[in-house]
Amino acid sequence: MNTELLKQLRDYVCSNHQSENTRRNYIDNPIRMLKHIGKRYKDITQEDLNKYIQYCYEKYKRNTLSQQFWILKDFIRWTGRTDLSLPKIQPVDSGHTAIDSKEMDKIFAVIEDLSPIHRLVFYLVYDAIRRPMEIMNIKITDRHGDILKYYGKTGNTVGVRHCLLTERLQQAWDDYLTVRPEPKSVEDKKVLLLNDRTAYRGRRMLTTSQITHMLREICLFASLEIPDGEKPTAYMFKRTTITQQLLEGADIKLVQFQAGHTRPETTLKYHRINDEDVRKYLRRLEDKTQDVRKFPNKNK
Image: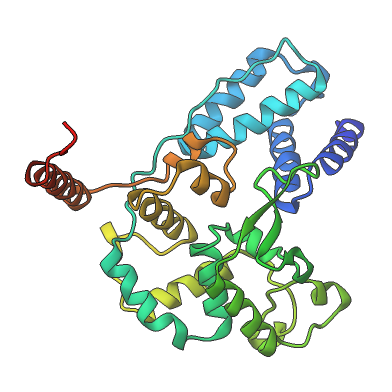
């Protein structure tokens, strides 16, 4: 019914987005909408779209809706249908906390004794603040000394970004290469991380769940106490890294650059503070004012 339109959509998406995950989302969401409405796209009315919007409200959570409607807005804009519109939904803060420094010390106490792939994955998440999908797609040639080239979340071909690698991350990278499984194909040979278990040994990872599984193994080895019963994820460590760096006084622009965010407001969404953080700040502030009273400026 919409075969020609969808063919053109695939060409448009593939020419504008590098990431396979982004391409899939920008193609699957319009297909899902068209299939649900069951009409040729040129015959769809705002009333049809409103019914689909209501269906989505009942089926999906708010943050999922925010992403889906953003993609559909792009699709509608691309088709030139100015008579169709979708509501703008702001994503909500999940409210999850960051791991405190005492708990993180447990990980640093064991991380060097874990396997090279566990160390590499951890430092890519914690030091380089990379997403699981980006980690899966890292190629060996993406590293240039202490610089890692990557495609951001949007996957734009014109928007290749880079972040800096810590010395311990560089060492973990080099250590992993010495034990990396023999690649099964030419394509597998290009990718940094390869499966090291079962029948898939030597093949590239196909799902981000493998990255998440390794992070959970690390937390298990460290006997980590997860706040509020939260399950370990890359985003939990992302919140932790950003929170710790900002609490230590890092410039927001530096943290934003390393996280790969286009706006500082996005970086601040990952910033978490608790009562103990406020107490530490107030103690430092109090100590500073007491020092001023003890040693007043002699020039006055």
